[in-house]
Image (cartoon, rainbow, N blue to C red; front, side, top):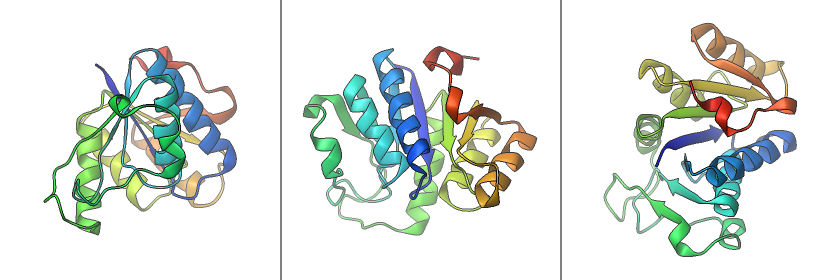
Length: 177
């Protein structure tokens, strides 16, 4: 199946979290597998939305034996709708270096990446830059054009990302290039 990554802020606006969940549900409903890292915020919203419409892949920044799904996601779909992609020792705890490696993996296995509310530093920024370096399509979405989120979005657009309007996000077919 085609994979599309949805990544973003651990502290998103309500509008961005709702849009990420809705986009993930729509993508999964069209047969795409939604990929994200399993962190709180946008990742959790994306996994939860995907589980309502289809399937999702978690790429944790820890070993598979220590990774735990968020309780809110457990209500949506049975076990067969999700999988874990692990690249670290099974008992390994979260490490910043693992998060950076995980971010590259998320970009590499995805046909496109949608970054919600990217700041101009941090994990979403790192995933976005890796996506552009890999010459993969990068879409950026933000509820505001001010502050660090606005700066991140503006910089990524100058580097080649496509900005999407949070209010009028297109359906999954628009992610095809």
